[in-house]
Image (cartoon, rainbow, N blue to C red; front, side, top):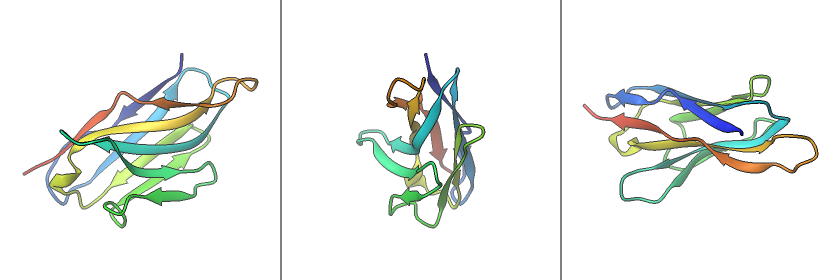
Length: 121
């Protein structure tokens, strides 16, 4: 059973930085699009950033210029570097990835368990 394991969340002051990481546990065949989403209390889950296997990235307008998504295909890991954090960035951040576990079964979408990011003084 594949699980996406996230790390790097925590409490940071406004203007600070955090780096999130996400990688699958267990053996897999390949990973395609990867991304980060977030859900603040009382709000719907929203896209933060996505990245294709060839490193083409897409960002929500609210994080452009402050967040950077990247991936290491050799490590099957996706990162989210978050700079100039604001209180409104406070949310649970979820990793998402299209994972193909074995070559003869198509990929499907997996979600991580979520990691809390709190921006507060």
